[in-house]
Image (tube, rainbow, N blue to C red; front, side):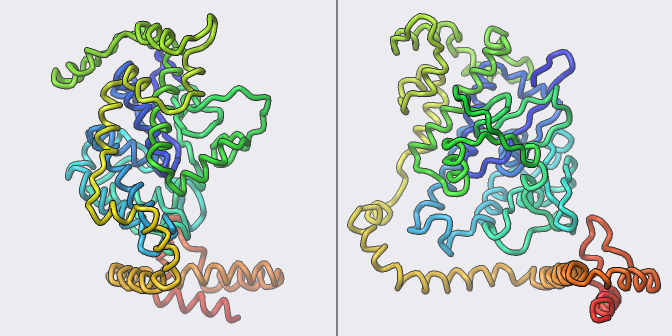
Length: 438
């Protein structure tokens, strides 16, 4: 919710491959109400929302963010099995992309301005991280916030020695105060900036601070958040974000406010200054679409299929950025492999090629995993012992008192919160083994 008197913050929820929606929202706010972005007290983010918040605060241009997202989408879609293909390693793609595009002083740029939502593996509680000491810590925190077990891998990454997974498992839409936080999400629900739909269906599910409307469109978007759609759908998602942000500004009476932010440099102000007035754009689009009297423009635009002329009228810069990002840069071999006959042949040969590609991908992942094997093995031993202990206490309730008495006798307690690796020492392992064997 937006409250200019009490200040405000922004929160971007987890969305997977639908992160292009946030680019459309940010482009709209930067053109029509830049102070909402630059004067926000803090920007919260979970998963893809955390990635977007980090790239924005680090000063990466939106056109470059568009290119990064679409390049990742192309990598995920170029194989026959998509994201399920063994050669596609989303964790490595994210790490390489963050290392390449984030500036070296990113920890100084975003510390205190961002809150990244993480889920601690040891107890499942939510942790918000705001301060960082190096670029490596920023990258580790973002990778932890995006890690979905079994989808991204088996062993969760670590941040400052503690294992974390996707923040969406504990708080998918982090915020400090409901009344002063502008929530943004590409799913239909009860958010400030989100797709709207006129329907008598009021069924909502609130999971981990995430209001999810039970409708077919949301289930489609949910599937596309894990398996990226084609580029045409991605453009529509980006346009949807721009239109939903326009609706939010209109509902709060912000469209007629000054459009330029005093903190911006003259080089950044000049392109924004030529943006037409919202009322002029409204009249132009209404005449073009032939709207009836009383019909809402934004609702009509939301139901129309993709049309480049609409985006050219609303935001020429966003239209130019999308056109440049989606320009075909493939070589001759890539264009040849996209032919229908070649794709059909690749599916026919899949039973023969998939085992070979799987073996190569497994070997490659093993080579990458070699430096982290000792720490990961120790964590796996701790996780296995914890699972065995919980199973014993559930199957044999009488052993719960015996284990508790032995813990008091030996002075061994549960693993400290946030430090599961502490039980990996030889002495702790010997005590834990004695407890399990009785």
